[in-house]
Amino acid sequence: MLQFLKKLRSYWLGDVSFVVLLIMLVAVVFVLPVIMEMSEHGVLLFNVLLLSVFLSGTFSTDNYWVMMLSAILFGIHLTLRIIRFGDNPYSYYVLENVVAIANTAVFLYINFRLLFRDQSVNVYRIIGAVNVYLLLALMGALTLEVIHAVAGVSIGGNVLLTGSDRDYVHFIYFSLTSLTTVGFGDIYPISTGAKMVSTSLAAIGILFPAIVIARLVGLASQRTP
Image (cartoon, rainbow, N blue to C red; front, side, top):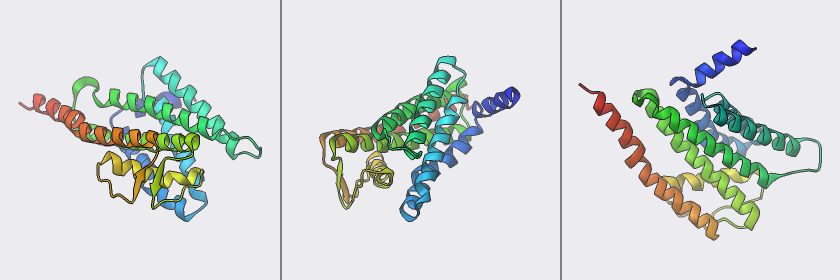
């Protein structure tokens, strides 16, 4: 078992793991919202895959304290989800999403470290940059969920929010349109908190290619003879 965990950790510390993470994030951000709208099983699949993404963060760092923080947050998140989906009357929806946001923040830090370690650039590092971008969209969606759960209002327009996991379909859509600065206008922020999240995502979406991608290109040009 210990040998298996070492191999698993070695894999997630390697550049090739960026491809697997990309597949998982594409499913969480683009595929599962469609399934959630069509099937009741979509919610369960979303929660399982989201927890799997966070679990991978535990193996993706060689920093002991960051690894422990990621493991603790994953354990809390998993426990809260089991409580809510278990056969009992208890639910901690807001706390779940707050922990998920913290988990995403730690995972973002881990992936930034992996992205720029040893100052090398290859196709896997470009994929890693895409992963960071999708994680930012995911964090935006989770933050909007918390805002709506606490304030009772977040986004409006052509959307019907139910206060359940299915609302993620609308939150991730709005988060992506804000991050990419597309802004179709069919959904828009209503509360102050949602407005600040929207503008923050838009600012990050503009700065991301200017800073992260430019940095990767700069590293690649430095290595070009």
